[in-house]
Image 1 (cartoon, rainbow, N blue to C red):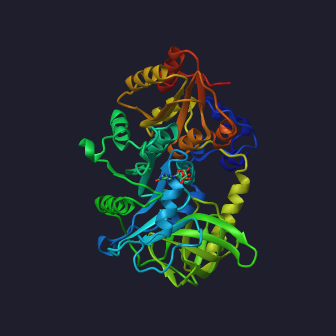
Image 2: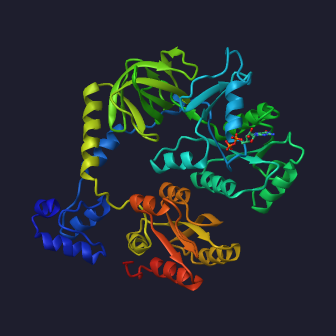
Amino acid sequence: DEVATMMDVPINKVIGACMSLGIMVTMNQRLDAETLSIVADEFGYEVEFVTADIEEAIQDAPDAEEDLKARAPIVTVMGHVDHGKTSLLDYIREENVIAGESGGITQHIGAYGVKLESGQRIAFLDTPGHEAFTAMRARGAQVTDIAIIVIAADDDIMPQTKEAISHAQAAGVPMIFAINKIDKPTANPDRIKERLAGMNLLVEDWGGSIQSHDISAKKGTGVKELLEKVLLEAEILDLKANPDKAASGTIVEAYLDKGRGYVATVLVQAGTLKVGDYVLAGKHSGKVKALHDERGNVVKEAGPSTPVSVLGLDGAPQAGDKFNVFEDEREAKQIAAKRTQLQREQSVRTQRHITLDEIGRRIALGDFKELNVILKGDVDGSVEALTDSFQKLSTEEIQINIIHKAVGPITESDVLLASASDAIIIGFNVRPMGNARSIADKEEIDIRTYSIIYDAINDLKDAMEGMLSPEM
Ligand code: GDP
């Protein structure tokens, strides 16, 4: 009703306007930004967004080319359970691929950096798996530059391997395959590469462009060479950041330590973080009291691509929250407070993700060019049939991307991917499993299930033509 008061029009007219747009609202509901603009427009008003202003003020100004310096790649390890992700991360952490550093890394701070004999650095996120990767992305954090996909050579391309590949691809993050467990007599790396080729993923041995290396995470065989391939990929990506400015980056993890207060591991992505800086991270802020590296050593500052643990925040931000350094403590505190307030007001969260019902309207508004779809089915045949049909529905106005397809129920990981990539989920003869439904409700992800192929295709077609009647 605030909207109505501000525009000086009767509340029922505002509700009516929303309904004519196909949006059901109640009197006390907050409207999302887009709806607000359209409704205001109907009554001849223009909307200014205060929240957007706050967040924009935080945005970095673009860097001048000459200020940009090469930075280390940030790597996430993904793959099917038991294929050796943890073993690989542990080997890299503990063994002497790290030149000139005494002892292995003993502290688990959520990320660690290694220095190779060449002097080059790589940063690893220490929470393996595509769930963690995509959960961060769903919070708006794109941290990973390169994904290592671990595949056990004594096994096959497993469901979670496929998921990991889809998640990396959906994020546009280049992959390197680590074909693991080659010390085992039953290992057959060639078969894995053949299977990958069958999925249109051609590794270098097969004349393709995707790097891969045979390794044993347990014995350490090939790990050094794998890391060299990571650096090669990084070189191609030409990763750069400006180290000479106030720091910004992403929270990797945070917790309350009884003796030390809140401890947050951050990954600096631009600028240099220093002791004494005023930091804003999510809804929390504070002055940096101390910085520690993954070896527990005190450090004075941390530049781009460096993970570092921070003491001094007044709370524990969430993994995936952005952090920024402010010149003025008051400003950092004010924004933190404003965010807390906004979040409280938005406890009834407004629509953020695309739904089938909304597609027609969004196409008409002209701001919608691609529809991302996650497709799950009971058998391979139906998944392939639907993939073909959906792809044929693409038009000049709108392109349909199947960002992940697989046989099996709709999982939490599918919902996370949908959230991170703004996708809808279509299930054919399958249903959401475990917590998938409740997370989808919370994230407002549209899940549609069908048992007749024709119905699924028709719904999508109608939605694209803006003719779908809202699902009740
Ligand atoms: P994750 O679930 O992907 O993190 O897999 P883990 O790293 O926990 O490994 C699962 C199992 O495979 C453990 O028992 C490891 O010891 C074993 N493993 C991992 N890498 C290798 C390897 O290179 N060779 C052999 N023989 N076993 C391995």
